[in-house]
Structure formats: structure tokens, C-alpha cells
Amino acid sequence: MFKKTDLILFLLKRYLRFDKTQPFISITAVLAFVGVGVGVMVLIVAMAIMNGMSKEFEKKLFVMNYPLTLFATSHKGISKNILDQLESKFPHLVFSPYLRIQSVARANGIMSAGIVFGVDIQKEAKINEILAKALQGVDIKDFYQDKFSLIVGEGLKDALVLEKNSKLSLFFTKLEPTGLTFSPTMKRFDVKGFFDSGLKAYDTSYIYTNLAAIGAIKNIKPDIYDGIHVFSKDPMNDIDKIKQALLEIPNYGIGVEGWWQQNGNFFSAMALEKRVLFIVLMLIILMASLNIISSLLMVIMNRRKEIALLLSLGASSREIKKTFFWLGNFIGIGGIILGIILSMLTLYILSTFPIISLPADVYGITRLPIDLSMTDFFSTIVGAIVIVCISSYYPAKKASKVNALSILRNE
Image 1 (spheres, rainbow, N blue to C red):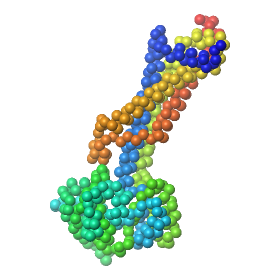
Image 2 (tube, rainbow, N blue to C red):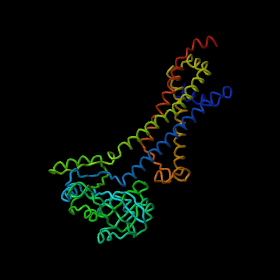
Image 3 (cartoon, rainbow, N blue to C red):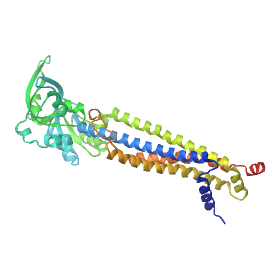
Image 4 (cartoon, rainbow, N blue to C red):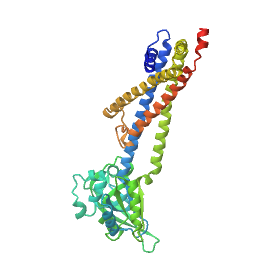
């Protein structure tokens, strides 16, 4: 005597065979299988590329923007005493004070505007890997023995035709005591090295020197800073802790900003683009699932006499419904597995071989970044399974409603 599961398995094997008398039905099922597979593959690959591009841009922006930045909201600046308090209260964070001033650089008869950061070279190198890389082969003692030393970007190097140990003149403006005029200040610096962030805007306009040089030019006390760069592994939580700590300091006059606030519009746009792309590409799977519906309906129409006979011999409507539901799921989930295999193969090829090259002057990278998020992966799989199950349910329900008596009488 057959069990219910035995009957369902028997019918599944029978209906999955290639039907020579009705080849179009089998071809439709194959198209549904391949369509779901291609849809899943395209969606996973697209999400991996979008996530990779987002992480790459985030990494590039981190170089100059830092996870957290403290900045003075008054002319008093940030004192070393406050820096020491924060370092003792948050030993897991890395703090790097800075001074900032705008300037015009001139060399070889060429001029270019930029922003000069006075930093503690050793502390800044701990949180800025691009600067740390630029300091390789550079004697850091030069920045302490000769305070007028510079690290400039590759973009500025090319624009002003600079070489290592070149002289670079920087022009600054200073407000006169009358408050009515600006007077220019010029100082010659020694170029000790070059950094390459991969972003031309930074490489052309950012210049690094030490705190003493900018402090002398701005004529401020040695232990006063314009702001502090902060490295944190969890900046979204640490920002609230730092704000709370600053509230305990009377008249501190300090603001705190996270990287997501500095570039909020950019990353919000990328996140929106990613969500829209996910929805649009999910429609590919939805369209492929329509083939599952049409294939199952054609099987039901072609096998209605068999279904009626099974019902008359004692098979329940529930068994018929389960048979066609799992028939559609077999086609759809098989397509999902095919899509996963194809996507893994595609991602491996894209990450291993330079099939797609990117212009470095536009993106700052030459190879296509791939970063498959497990959240995106499982969201794709779950979404595809839901679509397949919904597509299989309607034909299965239709099959269970077959009127056995009417069909057997007319046939």
C-alpha cells in the first residue's frame, strides 16, 4: 500500500520527465529553471559589486575624513588638557590633534590652492594609512628638527612638477589688527614625501606638515588645536560617549562629527541605489517565475484525466496540491541552486582575472571591487524562495480543484 509521500514522489518523477508528446511543456519548465537561475546569479553579482564599490568609496573617504572628528566651535580652540582627558577616558580610541589653514602653493612658476594640516606626524600615521605609507623611507626626525617639512599628494606633485626635497612656497593670509585688511605671509617648505589616496581631489589639495609649523604661522600657543581626528572601530556608539564626556567639561566649545554625517548624502544615495537595484533585479526572478506558473498550468491541463483518475481512486485533493506545489518548488529551487553556483563562479572569475578594468583617475581603483555581503546573499535567496513558493501555490491549488466526475464523464 502506497504512503502519501510515495505517491507524491512517484508523481514528481513522472511529471519531471521530458514529455516527447508535449515537448513545449518541458521546454517551458527548462526555461523557468534557467530563468530563475540567471535572475539569482545577476542579483547576487550586482549586489556584490554594489557593496564592493560602496566599501571602496567608504575606505577612500575614511582616509581624509576619519571615523570621528572633534572640532572647535569657538576661537579658543581645543586645549591639550582636554585632549589628555579624552585619551585617559577612552584608552581604546586613537586621538590625533591637528591645526588647519588654507594656503596657495607655488613652485616652478605654477600656483595651486590647497589646505595645509599641521599634525603630530607619529599620531596621525597611526590612523591614516595613506600618510603612514608616504612616510616609509622618510626620516620622521626631519619633521621635528626642521619643522617646515611637508608631505604632499601625488596630484599636487604632478601639478607643480615637484620632486623629493624640492622647495615649495606656501602663501597664507593673516587679518591685520585693524580688521580691515589681510596681509600675505609666505614660507618656504621642504617636500619630504608624497601620498596617494586614489582620490584626485585630496591628492591635489591636501598638504601635511607638523603642528609647530602651522602654530607659528597662525601665531597661537603650542598646546591649542583646531580639532582632533579620532579613530574608532565603532564610531556610531563612541560618538555618543564622547559627547557625554564633553558635557562634563565646562565651556568646552567642541563639536563632534562622524564620517556618516560628513558624507551623509553620498552614502544615502548609494544605499537608495542599492535598494532600487535589488527590487528591479528581483523582478527578473519574478518574470522567470511566471514560466513556472505557465508550465504547471500546462502540465495540469495535459494531465487532467490522470488527476481525475487519481482522485477517483482515493487520492486526496491535498496530495494533488502538494504534488504540484513541490513540482514548482523543485523547478524554482533547482534554478536558485543553479544561480548560486553561477554567481560564485562569476564572482571568482571577476575577482581573479582582470576582465573588467576601471579608469583609476575616475574611481581611484583599477579592478572591479567585489564584496558579497551575507545579508545581501541571504536576502536574495529568501526573496527568490518566497517568489517561487507563491508561483507554485496557485497552479497547485488549481490542480486540487479539478472536478474528477465531470472530466471522466466527458472524456
